[in-house]
Amino acid sequence: MAIVFGLQRFFNDIRYHRERYRQFIGISFVILISVVGKPEELLFFTGLAFVFLGIAVRLWSSGHIKKNRVLATDGPYAFVRHPLYVGNITLGFGFALASSLWWSLPLLILILLVFYPQAVRREDENLHHMFKKDWEQWRTETPALIPRISRYRKAQGGRWSFTQSLRQNGEPIIALFLLFWLYFLSLGLH
Image (tube, rainbow, N blue to C red; front, side, top):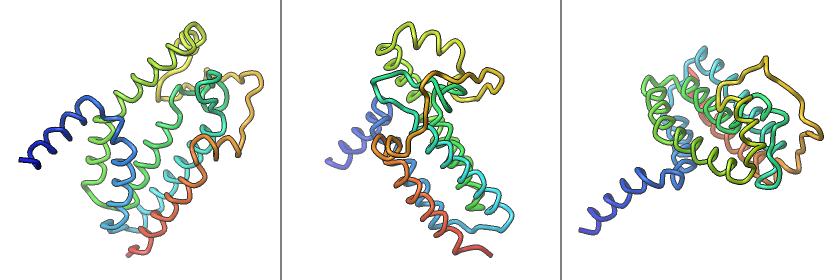
């Protein structure tokens, strides 16, 4: 009976409180495909490029974010409203390719569809609530996830900060974690 109740609560949480599981599921995806992956050289090195790009986007983004103090509209936030998610999607795609597992890409797409539309919507609502008119103007000029390069503009006072990246998200530590699993996956190269 406790198992049934636990499963019922889990599925209820997935339906109504997905944000509780998004990071855990993403980390589990990376570890799973790194452990069971059967990397082929071409796919591995193509995926490696995407993983590095995703890590770079995340590092760049986390060094510009001003968590709940100022609406970040500079750096990567001048291209998309959710560059950390773009980085996650890019590196997830890279890990899926690098693993050479046929089912890793459909699994990644499922994870993205289950978690990211709600995450983008919730974050947009929170930012709108905090920054009102500034957010509304930024939203009309800046797409959520697909960069619009022609619309780039540099905001005043926007500088990237390693310290901010480390303090706000622990991003350099996350990058090291991802690189460890990429290295682990590389040990299986044929």
